[in-house]
Amino acid sequence: MMATERLLERKGSTSVDYPRPQFKRSEWIDLNGAWAFGFDPENRGESEGWQHGGFLKDEIKVPYVYQSAQSTVENKELHSIVWYERTFEWELTEKDVHLHFEAVDYLAKVWVNGQFAGSHEGGHTPFQMEIHSFLTDGENRITVRVEDENDVEQPIGKQSWKAENFLCWYTRTTGIWQSVWMEEVWTVYLEDVRMTPQVEDSAIQIEAQVKRHDHPVYVEAEVFFQGEWITTGGVWLKAHQRTAEMMLDVESDQADFRVFYWSPDEPNLYDVRFTVKDQDTVHDRVESYFGMRKIEVEDGRMLLNRETFYQKLILDQGYYGDALMTASFDEMKADLEKVKEMGFNGVRRHQTIADRRYMYLCDKLGLVMWAEMPSFFKFSKRSMKRMMDESREMIEKHVNHPSVIVYTLMNESWGVNEVYHRKDQQDFVNALYYQAKALDPTRLVVGNDGWEHTMTDILTIHDYNADADSMRESYRDKASFVDGSPSKTSRKQNYAKGYRYRGEPVMVSEYGGIAYGSSGGSDWGYGKRPESEEEVLNRLKALTSVIEETPYVQGFCYTQLTDVEQEVNGLLDHNHEYKFAPEKIKAIMAKQSDGFIFE
Image (cartoon, rainbow, N blue to C red; front, side, top):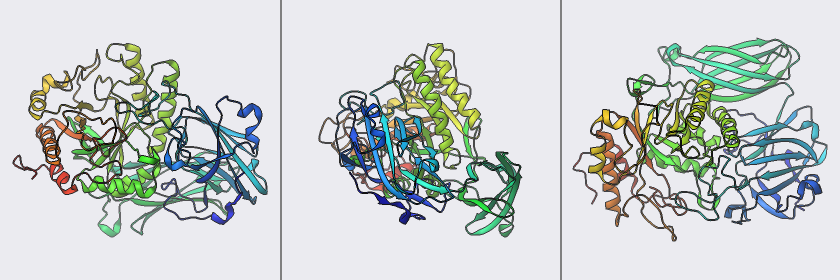
């Protein structure tokens, strides 16, 4: 049995590992680290009472999944049910305690001191539960049962559903794979907040949700920019009234009534402090931030803050070698700083839902982000429900981050393989699209990225043609291209049957994928394998030039940032180190002249 930790000594941490930087309280407790662990191959745990403690004999390092080396378990066998347990000393106070899980793949059931605290289905989105009523003075126990079937009817993204990895599908993820943490709050607290920039009005619209007040409370928002106070606003709520709404002018009279907009070139962020109080007591205080920016489409262009915005993205699979899909703050920061150094202005986070600290870093560093739902791979009522539910939670997770400008819901018709001609599959993609637009009308939405589009705000193209001349010919005539095929090498069509181009911006959201280097196994990438660094860079330049020279294409996303397991088409290697000098990549991204050759 593992030793019981005294968590009270860790309150008030200011670590960069705080899991939710955009909704920060002063007292929180990091629960990452050593947990007791065990497999349950015969599904006996719950009936035998494992939730009451003492049955788990092995150990795992949370939040690394058992398949990873970092977990210290490193077992690649398929185990559909796993258990976790942690004990700790606690001293009860008047405050409530919230237990947070940033991501658990896939179905989690949680007990505190043997009492059922709650469950959550969905492998990539955060959830929390109030556990004060289950705690006692002295030793306490958290037990988690996770079920993750080898199931193509749940959103799994790039996780292989076969016994081995293949093509661009990688090692499976089972169990806790993002941070676990607790925080103390008063019984009256700020449950959630939504901040919507109103660029035309130089204002921020705020909707704050307050929970469990049986008397009037005042919700206050104080806005600052780089330490300078900008404005303060507030709303009184009647007893049990949940939502406080306010609109705050963010023009600064210290800077000629200027608004500081957010963009990749100038990632300006306003700080905001939320306080819930009444005449006698401060009940809750939360530190947050927002960015003033607007993304929209007009006449086939994408506009950021009313100016044409050409996107230069890179595809980020979100895998980290021995840690699989789990990364430290420093690892995420190092990756995103390299993205900037290579001349890209954004990332497409592909088939995984990132840690909230990843979005925070994009906000701070100045990188736009495309958020994407992981795909399922079999169309059914079950998979549709799961996708609808988890995509709602994905949007709630991203909604306040200024860097996030696009939601991608499906990819390359995965899970809707007959969407070209099947009305029910088209209707499902459209249902995802309209749900996203209703939940967040401020962002652009792509229904099915790559080809066979139904409803979409952007015509996105996946084109892995390795020959620049052939690629250029594909894009020569816009009228025939947009209602045709993504490329001369593709058997797909840009639009599903019954749908046509309606003037959307056109973007090449995947291209390149040039394999270089070796994983030591069965290497995989797109096109003929180059024999030298110079050959890679010149092919990258030639393909990128075709896109940049096509006037109706509004940007691109290169595949990809890093090598991942058997896939070796990253600009960074498996250790996330440069394969090529970053200044050479930046020269290509900066639209160098046609005569630029790498020596």
